[in-house]
Amino acid sequence: MRRSILFTAALATGLAALGAAAQQQDAAGAARQPVQDRMSVAEIATMLEGQGYTLREIELERGRYDVEMIDANGLRVEAYLDPVTGGVLPYRDDRDRDDDDDAGYDD
Image 1 (cartoon, rainbow, N blue to C red):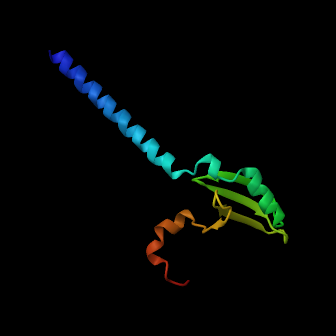
Image 2: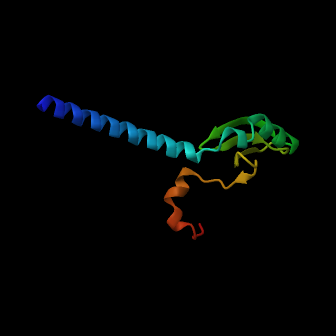
Image 3: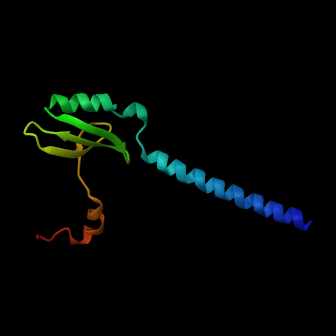
């Protein structure tokens, strides 16, 4: 009897852990854009090259395109692009997350 109670408790704990992991994966997957709605890397590259940029790297990172390129003046440019529209997203450095309270000051 004691063995079956321990087995049942262990099984319930394992199923609960699996359910929590599946729920976390669903939440992470919901934040990503579906592939059919997202512009392809080739479409992003064609758009940017048409604007005069020379591409160095395009990565899909955290649900947005992280692009490194060179402009017509030879300057290195980094941008985050919306995966659906291709529009430029605001740039946020990891340090910006810590400085949100001090956003109104001038150096």
